[in-house]
Length: 396
Image (cartoon, rainbow, N blue to C red):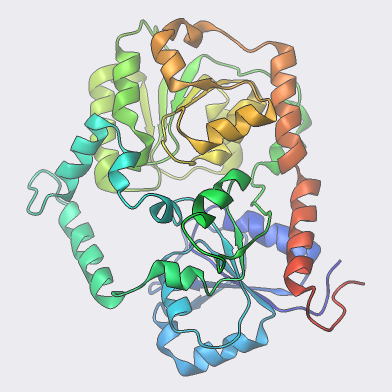
């Protein structure tokens, strides 16, 4: 157990944060402070973490910036705009750990975001981003927010900001070199850590030997165009799906895009389309997606790892885009996963099931990297690695 250390977490209002709080408090109790930059001081996704709200322009306050010196390490949960601006205003010798989310570093790997989208999805993105679009009423508000953000946070050199960071924990180990290759020797050191938000699933005896309890189909993980939903819809709409439900999580992301997907889904699949546009408690959500025997994740980048882990553990057929780094990561580990391209060529895969041995093989691979003990060990190693050069004792 780690004592006598001050750890600051700068976090967005995301569903992963409760897992981070649990992990860090288990390893370093009463040593963690969680700040959420917010104007309205309201939370949608964080439920069990005691947070302190701070002004989104705190980085402009010399008093606030000076106060950061009391922390032994500062955890940047995603490199969002606030955290970038804070780095830009930092001149002190502070220790930063960047917990990558995916969206916050793929722009460093690929400057052109169009590579994320397939043809029909790209057309939707272009429509939603056209100035003066009359079809999307809320898009104008979103565009104004984006314009204001550009004015307020302009001239940020993201690569220069990354060089101020000491350690970087991407979602997947194989993504580290993908990002580091765009930098010189000043790139942050690698540290292994993840939220382990699915760890409770591995300890649930009720699910320890179960297969999917239905024949539904899960598509994507959010209301973001990087899911390439439309291309999956086109693949499925030519198949005889019977009474299968098409389940699409759309509770976070872009509301305009979510509306397009819901309308298109209902048009294609009628009452069998279920767009999840409200946030659900974890247990309730896993019960619902546990009715799916197939999960199709058509992202070009790593995304939706939590959903993928759950579906693999429950014994579903999981299909990933072949260029997704998570596909190569899982295959290298020996997991039984498929590509979306394989499904397109052999749609009869929708009617197949993994064997008990294959399900167990996938579970062992997942548990070796994501169970509760592994996650807590990673948390302790992260803290000790960051603090190892400091002349003080941190463990009892």
